[in-house]
Length: 174
Image (cartoon, rainbow, N blue to C red):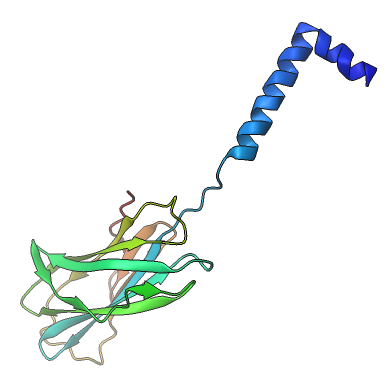
């Protein structure tokens, strides 16, 4: 104990103890950082002259429910109905949504999912998104392997039969 007081009496000792105390308080009071994300994957199947895109929206949190306020899909500034998704996703769970786009529409279809985690009030609502490149279905049947896209390790990728994987759209974090 005398040794501790001896260290505290010297100027470098007092400085070291003060810095150590401040760091301990900051670390002790810091809120843990729990990043939350909606993980989105997609499958595009050509059916009856349409692109039928099935989006799977999963929560990366296994301890909290995720609420979905909106799921909006658009291509070239035109919005297409995205239907059948559950507004509440159980911890670690997922829901699917469907968007149907006419075959005549080609380009980059983007879904933006507006999500929040009510059990974690410190986590603000956010938008997670994914883009999928659509090309004409003409000459294809539903037996053709579907085009898929998924959010993998922070980057979205797309692959289609006979095409290389290409980077797409990263999630928007707000």
